[in-house]
Image 1 (cartoon, rainbow, N blue to C red):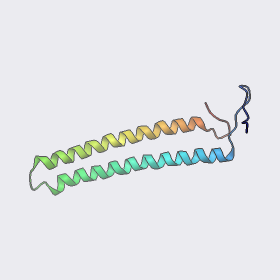
Image 2 (cartoon, helix red, strand yellow):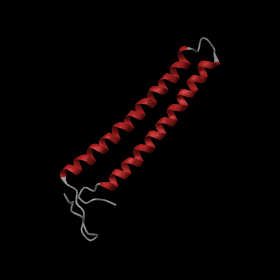
Image 3 (tube, rainbow, N blue to C red):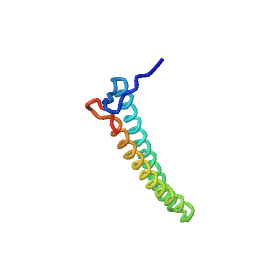
Image 4 (cartoon, rainbow, N blue to C red):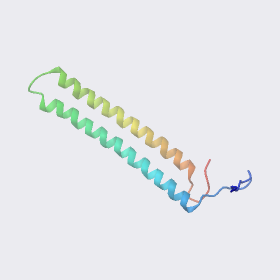
Length: 103
């Protein structure tokens, strides 16, 4: 079976099925970004819990774990946001609402 090859002057159009696939991919990107944020918030709460629950014992070990958890959460949230924005930009280039294929 031969596929139709478009000429350089011919404008490419995506089908309804293709647009649904791009929409699903964009929603998956949003879910992944929210999962990064949810995980980061959990790590912040875990770090704060280390400070609160072990403040009576005055161990530097628990404070260190709390600080590392909070610092890791900030890094994780930043990485998740960067990945989300990068992927959203790439998927936006792929699909234009008027049905044309982007560059």
